[in-house]
Every structure is written in structure tokens, then in C-alpha cells.
Length: 614
Image (cartoon, rainbow, N blue to C red):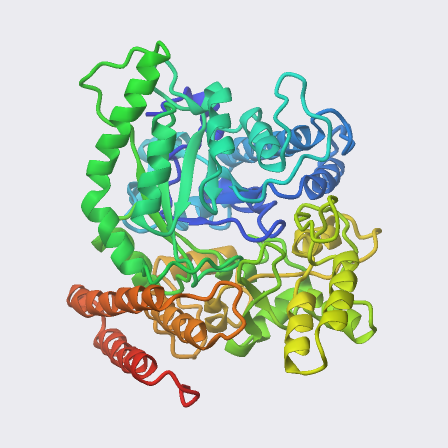
């Protein structure tokens, strides 16, 4: 769909990666520089567009490092947020383009990066096979094969993420040509104007205003040659959500180039409960119905485009549409099963890459805490001001600072950037619930209206649990690029899978782990993502049954539906175990044993939801 001239290959990323995995967005800062570390090896990654101030800080640092001119864009400049984002993404594109040019000129020596590029590819890749053939060849044949390999080099995609619900009022004057001025719309505008040929990953559900705004930019619409310069990836947790959002976009002439399925609970960052919709059954539903959905969406897309004057023959086949999955992956057999047996296009691996210094930006102290972390250190917390459960590292510098402020009688953090200001309890001016101003006011209100006791303590704890994630998730990047500024305690949001990794790794080590050429997990029993996610959902069911002060209590009907979904999931995985016959006996036995144990726990909860549960 997206054939580009050779000289433009380094910017043409849609569907181009030779790898069968990608690195998802992590936090606001941990993957901002990941393209500079991995894209030249053909590995795709995702950059967060939340914090334009952090992007500007890193852009200045990178320009200084590479001896490039830097023209600052003040926060209050006209359309400053969008312009900062465009400038940063253009810098990434230029730097990666330069890396690819230098890579093509390298000799195929044992330790050269061009050799590493092909050596890291999956062994089933035709390019990996061609590389091995080149190594054995001699004379003119060897030279011809080397040129063929150089010609095939493509970088990984530099995709971007917009969290659709993170859409506060813009803080800089709007562009007169595009007066829409909100954080999400400005972020989209910044990406749309960039020179990247890549995709925007839209996560966290529907934002009708943002979806409509995509139409303002021709790069998201097919060219007369039916190619796309920029793609749309929807991150979803179930098939119905994909249907709903896909139809909304298709009726505007916008094609979803990828559905990226993510586990709602078994992931890093914000954890969205899915009413029992488990990864395995969700993927199976996509496998059964995606072709029909693609046909329906293409019909809507074609009609909308024809109405806009684009001539598309009736016999045109639907545009390519990828299906990928991410959330809690940690074992090679899972990747192999999902891509080779179930036929998905790729998998996403997030949390393990936090332990890879040549793939993500994490300060040394935080990495040491990640390596030491146990299951008890990875907590599903109330830290997010968005009031969505948030995976958190109990031993992070951010959590230590939060507890220190509470002990000193000054709870709450200074509100430096204000991306999460939304609470208007104390007046028309929005406050962030993690801010000192809000928490002190709210605690005073609680103390005045509630007598001493457990209820008062619980309410105060719920207030002080909020952390400044919009600023402190960028702590590692600020330590790296602005060491002269006051230190920012790093917040970090690994998924539960972190407990199975206990050491730092090189990029090649992690890639080899994904493709089964090495083993990087620790000695803890690792049941895999399907079992881990089921375990987390059963724990969530028990919490929802027992929670007395929940802000979103479930009705008996809703709890019954959740339990029914989990029973269906158990039955699905028992049937799926027959598809694991190609795996080692130990893996199959562990899978079945864990299913039996979780089935027993589910029965215990539903038949006797008492404190004896353990």
C-alpha cells in the first residue's frame, strides 16, 4: 500500500519493519529516545506525545550533542505545544535517516552494526537467510549479495502515542489556521505536520473531537495512488471496541491500519479492567471476525472517500490491516505461538526493555530498583490523578518522595506542568489531585467532616496516594538531559512481568530472548502471560466483591457477568492447551496445573468470598 522511492525509505515506516515485535510506549519519557537506539536495527517503537516540555529539553540536548542549530520554542509561543512536538519528531527523523545512511556504508565485519542488523532478525526472515548465504559466499557473488542486503535496509517505525482521554485545555495560543486548542489535538497536529511516515497509536478509548480532527490532515487520507503517509493504530482490549472505533473512523474516510490488542490488567502504566475479557478469547474473536470487519470498514472508508472526490474502483481490495498484541509477554514460546501458530503480525514487549540500557532511558538507580523488584514491589496503585489503577514500583524515587512529603506534613507535589489538571471541587480553576494545593485542601475538608477513625484514615490515604506522574515519569530523561536542573524523583510503571527479569540486558540479548536464541528470565516460575492475566482478573474480581468503599462498586448483575466471562476464559484456555502440543512437556504441564489451581480459586471466591482467600 505504501511504496516509496528508495531515497525516501528511511521515512517510510508503515508495515516496513523486518521484525515481528515492537517496543510500546512506556511512561512519558522512557521511550522518547528509543528510536535513536533501535530504529537503525529495523525495530519499531512508540514515542509519547504527552510532555512537550520534556521533548523540548531533550531536543536541545540532542542538538548540542550532534552540533546542530537549536531554535527554542517557548511554551507560550503561538501553537507552541504542536510546534515543539513537530520539531522533536523531525529531529528524530533526521537523526535516524543519518544513522541509516552511515549503516549502509559499513563493512560486513563481525562486530559492525550492519551485521548486527541482520543477525538480530528472526531466523525465519528471508533477510536473515540471505545474510547467512552472503557470509558463506565468495568473490563477486558475495559482493552482489552484500549490495542486495544494503538495498533491503529499512529502519523501524517511529510511531507516536496519544492517550485520547488526556485532553485538557491547551496552554499556549492556538494556531490561527487550526484554532482547535487542546492537549490531544495539539499533539495530533504536531505529529501530522512532521516529516515522519509513521502511525499514531490512539489509546484509552473514544475521543470524538480528536477522531474528527484527523480529517483535517491529508496525510491520514489515501493519496490518488492509494498510499498512506501516516497510519492510524487503535489500541483496544476487546473486539467490540475495535468495531465501534473502526466504524467511527471509517465513516470519515479514515483507515485503521492496525488493531493493537492490549491486556487490560497485565501491562505497565494505566491498567484498565475489562470486565473479564481475557487476552486469549479476545484474540480468537479477532481471528474469526477480522476479515469481515476489514471488509465492512473498507466499504465505509471507500464510500466516504468517493464522496470527497477520490476515485476508488469498486473491485479495490481492502487496504492492509495488521493485528498485533501486547501486555505481559515474557517468554519466547508466547511470541512464537502468537505469531506463528495464531498468525498475528507482531507482538509488543514493554516492561522487559526497561532493563535494556541501549533501548530505553532509565536512570541507574531506578534500574537497580527494577532489577531487585519482587512481585510485592510491583503494585496496582491509586497513584494516577486520572483515577485509573496505575502499575507502580513501590521502591521508586517518586514513591519515596511521596511518602517523605506525607511524613513531613506537606502531602502532594508541586504542580510543575499541569497536564492532569481536571478537578474543580474547590473552584472553577482546575487542580491536579496529586498537587499540594489540592491535597491540603481536600485533607482539611475530610478532617472537618469526618470523625476520627478508620474511615477518616482511609479517605486521607486515598487522597495522598496520588503522585505527580505527568512530571515524574520524565525524571530519568531529565537527569540525562538536564542534569543542572533540580533533580526530579523518577516515577516508573512496570507491569507485573518485571518479577521474572532480574538483570540488565543488552539489546541483542533481549531480541535473542524474544526469538528463542537465549533465555533471559530469572529462576522464578513463570507461567506466561495468559495465566498471569487470568490470575490478575481473578484477584480483581475478589477485590471488587470485598471492596466496601469503592468509587465504582459493581452490581450483583455486573459481578455475575464478570464471573461468567472468567469461567468462559478458563474453558477457552483448557481447550487451547491442545494447541500447545509442540511445546515442551514441562510447559504444557505447568499451563494445565496453573489453570486447575485458578479454577479452584475462582470457585472459592464465588462460593465463599470470605477472608480465608489467599
